[in-house]
Length: 397
Ligand code: NIG
Image (cartoon, rainbow, N blue to C red):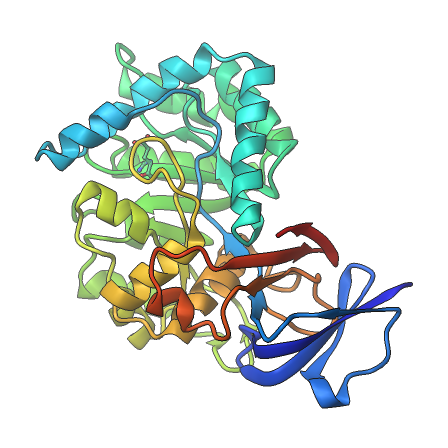
């Protein structure tokens, strides 16, 4: 198998607790896999040698929360929100109408374009959700289209009760025929447990049905109000609870409890429920930022994700999420980058494949047009993206 050595890396941030940061580094790919990494002076010979030009390198971003299957535009809603109107889940219905009107061809191209845009900005592994279908046919169509483009698909039939439909009748549909139809295309199920969306009993019903169908679980929890979402996620052993803006000390304790059998240094044991923070969404909805600092201090593993969607977070920039987490959520740059790489991988259950630079893992790596990862927050808003490698191949930059 052919080997590629990338050398003259000023700073190699591994997102691996044991290896940390290696300065004046090099990394060797053998085919699609990382075969070696260390000091450039110790580098082995390779078929191809690439000069990183003194750039910093880090794992590709792992974006564990997005809603890319949509058509239409909600910039007017955004402008109204900036003028003082509150965010309400009802905006989802506007996107449902536009998305339902889009053909398979249009929708596939839209999703592909969004994934390509994310890739150009360093995202080498991405999850997306259904949830703008809200009918059996549309949810199945969105799941099928997503499965041809992204790495992991989450079924979010329980995003909003369609107008004119009885909430219990719709929940039964989500847990019945709709679930059966999306099953071939999805790995996870999710529920928006929130006032104006699904209540605790309905959320339990969705999580129970999805678990029985063999899917991994997630919860959109505590985005807009205090409520049962976070504790439900822990109770059901969900892979993640996402948003977590309005959580209290008891929610943080519950999340921390789920990580008790996990060794955060050796990264062994049973993963608990990842708290996924979505800072771009928090800014766009003017919600309090998720308490990332408090969660980390309590021993909770967190992820940072883009939540790219047309209503609350129309960006796939993980670099923006990282800079916001450092500047506004009091994370160190190392914590923020780890949350946007290894944390995302944990939330998707793919930590043995991607999310950190370790021998044997997939060769997903991005070079920054900067000498250190600190520049991601030190120069907020600047495009730092350099060459991007996915499974050992140059795919952008
Ligand atoms: O994660 N919270 C629910 N879903 C999306 C928003 C969807 C929308 O408004 O279109 C979110 O913020």
